[in-house]
Length: 214
Image (spheres, rainbow, N blue to C red):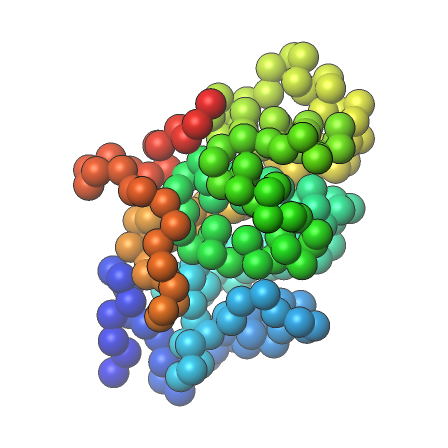
């Protein structure tokens, strides 16, 4: 019998039905499993950590969501630093402990310095970012706090990033915001031994509505 993991069952891989097993195998055996990992996808018993466990709850949706995540992570034209600047901006604005826990490590692998990570965690950019990276951070922050890009920012982002990569950035922000919402709604805990990163809003104020630092 699966134990609880936050508000959801923590699905034991030995007890999965075929639909859930297919999603589990896609997550643990797909592109995420290749190469060095910045964080573990599973606990020592093989149960999925973070937002991935929730994807087993409704496997049809979980399959589509994990496939979108794999495409965003491994199949876009976004440079690794751009991608991680955007993901960490989502984590900071939404106060998502797990997203920061995971992607701080990925960010280091992508070349982000401790100073740059500290600036993103505080809700801002860093002087060492190049002009395109500053646009990535600004656009991600605007999407999260204002829900759109005004005409000036859209034009600057389109010119700096190119329209295809701007589209990928918008989808990336939406995907990681979806994960942050899932983590908050289902009270998904951090992996054992990991410490909380952010001060959380009072209960009753959904973390996804927390606007973060302007």
